[in-house]
Image (cartoon, rainbow, N blue to C red; front, top):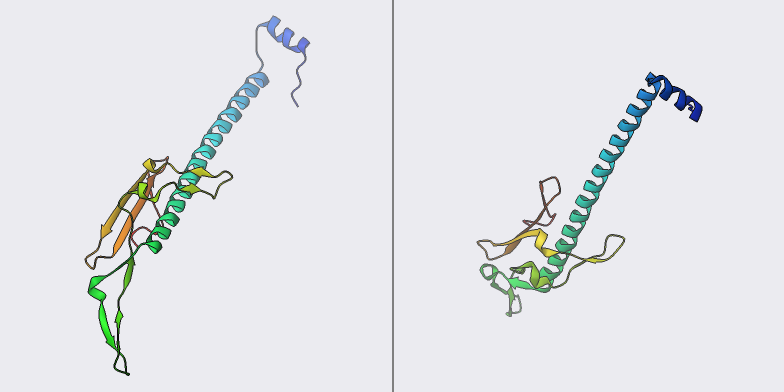
Length: 157
């Protein structure tokens, strides 16, 4: 155990030399400090990435709710089906309809964290694609702190 008293420090100063143990202690302290700073920056970057993923998932859920509330009929799937008693009924397939812009969703709040907060929609990339059968899919993504692009779970479905 390294223990220095004021008298020891003064004797080092008088002699004009620093011992090897003091140099090692300083180097060890600097390396621990550097490791702590690196770990903290890594932790902060991961926390930012987790927050962006959580916001993207909240937007994904908002788009699903919007799509359920705004279904469209696929015109190519419409057909009349005859029943045995001579009647007919209309059979058709539906698909979700998505907004052309995220601002049409209104205010979206992220309720998954410690605090409820309004999501800034300008961070996200969003595009709606109309397929050949007139059904719609969307692509929702966000740029992560490390430069990669996170695409939501329901994108393209």
